[in-house]
Image 1: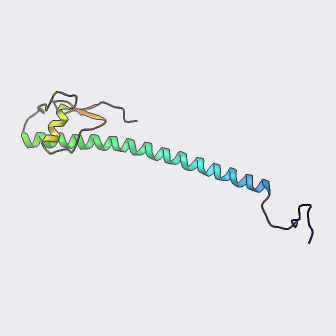
Image 2: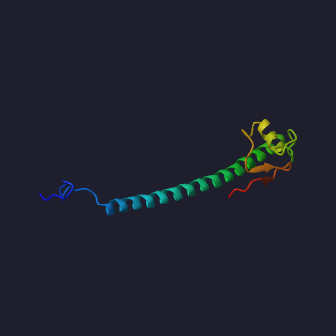
Image 3: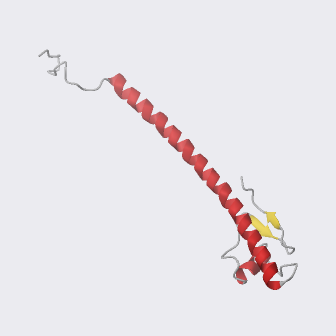
Length: 115
């Protein structure tokens, strides 16, 4: 066996500094790829949530008109979500929408961008 000056053998089988740096760089690249793909997934989820909220609100409005036979929704309260609150009070929705509001005539108004 050959020895070096610090009493280790030359064939210890350890990793060199270059090998360790290559592994660290590869792990950094993989981490960056995963982080950017997760960010894209959460953006898609927010867009899907916004679209689903619009569909839910549209179905609730149609159900209200079918149930009550009227062409407008009476307000409940005085706030910005007064027509949505009528749908909630009628049992057609569980809560108000974060992105959409309803006008008295039943059309949807985008109050917060869905992008």
